[in-house]
Length: 207
Image (cartoon, rainbow, N blue to C red; front, side, top):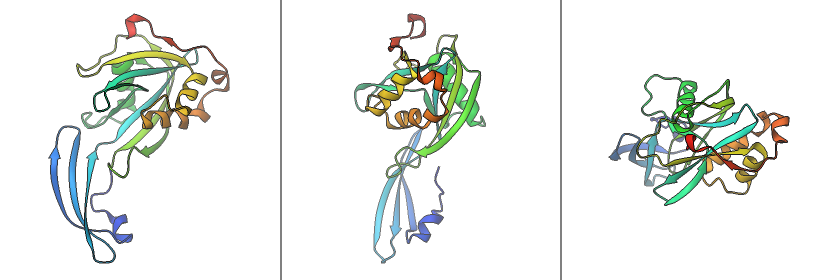
């Protein structure tokens, strides 16, 4: 999350004068700041404050990537993504623990190796949410997912080459998930990249 005192903003000539909370629930807080600009004018800036999130790029022991197709209510579409989730309800768990939790809950998986890739802001003009990307290798789909009632998710297994192509062509429409896949490319094994098997749905027991 961004700094509440907006110290960098002060250096840029943006001075926070007042903050009001317009809406708050368990995942987001909508705040409206009154800001005085360098020339003395004031402006109101509303944005969402959100806890950090983790995005996990899962690669199986066979060198394929596990994607999820999730129904997203705001856009009323099934969106191709990778497992991800917020840290708002995870207490003192580390980011790595949250990443493993998301693997278990969304696709019923464990992994042999979890590597931190990088972080980025999902939509810095509208939110302070920071996304942390992990590459999970040696992923095994061993258990039934532990999904919430509000989560409508289907699992798909594709080759890494196919997943990278889907991200580049905009077929993975969730921008943070697409970026996470592409940011992980250099860390993926060259042998895995040569696996050009076609996308196949996961078995019924994993959906």
